[in-house]
Image (tube, rainbow, N blue to C red; front, side, top):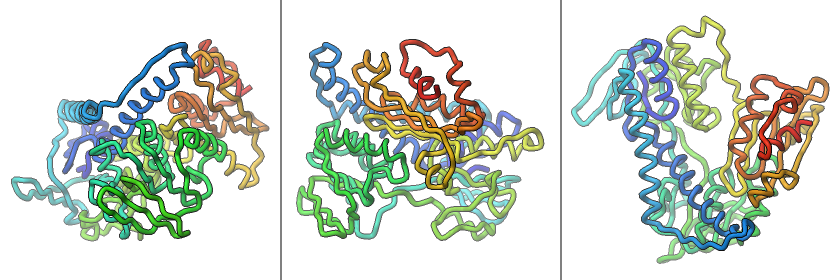
Length: 447
């Protein structure tokens, strides 16, 4: 029994059904996941459109003269169309595998009992194993009067009711910087409120600095060291007051201040499931909570809030439920999960970060190669950014890496495979890569 049809839930359902399990999946919104289909995918679709506009702006470097304008109506159709196709694709797959799908919501009645609420009434089902994968929702502070018109959560902005003249973005984590990039590409004036002294706190400072430089070049205003504490709306204008006395004024505000797990409404107490103070359900390396046959995955588990991580959790849970853990079984290592930020330039990283290695006193070898030395980057007219690889100086084993630049989200996969499989820098150098290609910089950095 699976509560939640996001990346974790549908992956678990598909794998369990393939292995011969009888699977029921309950979803109250969209199979494919509200966070995934109403946040992640729409944002990347809009970013891709913004990237197209930016590419046209750089056409002069490619010996072209071009001009493009945004069609907001067409953008709305594009965003909803992509999400719908993905939803239908996942639904068709699960149906073909014999998964019973129920449109409704579920809650626990006991350790093995689930009450399902649909438009037709209540149904009580007993299950051998239960997966809680109900995701999360945008966090809204008490001081933020969200109205869906001028004061927006992330889900109110995919796509927005209109392109803001001046957008104030609160929060400089991954979502905040992606919003800043997206709307500045669409022509909005953007003010980004940064609570720390750099955007993307916790990420490679060089990567953060490269992104800040790109933002400043586009006219983005950065409020560093500022923490928002109040929002006032006056007609078609909004004012965001910060704790240091500064005020950011604009036409719209978007909140990018994290998420809240959807654990309320599950009646976890009825099954004896423990929940921490943040509303997350702690799990072990098999993604079991304190009740062994109840599993938790995705945002609700409090692990890395990435769709890729949620999908892999779902797969591993299905394998464990179906008994495959009795064979050779590799546990998830969250420290080796690759992640990407779809800004311009893109930023991606995996494994050990340089700043963490030095703070821990670890001896590492750090090699960095700029894309300005790469033939393909020069051909593409976009030589911004770099490749950085962190390795063990004694063994050459690749420990991590970061990439800033064009297609960073794709290129990081090579380093991710190396980190996961304990490959060495020599393994990368000895690979015969395509020429000319951006990937050549990976071999250069590993040299």
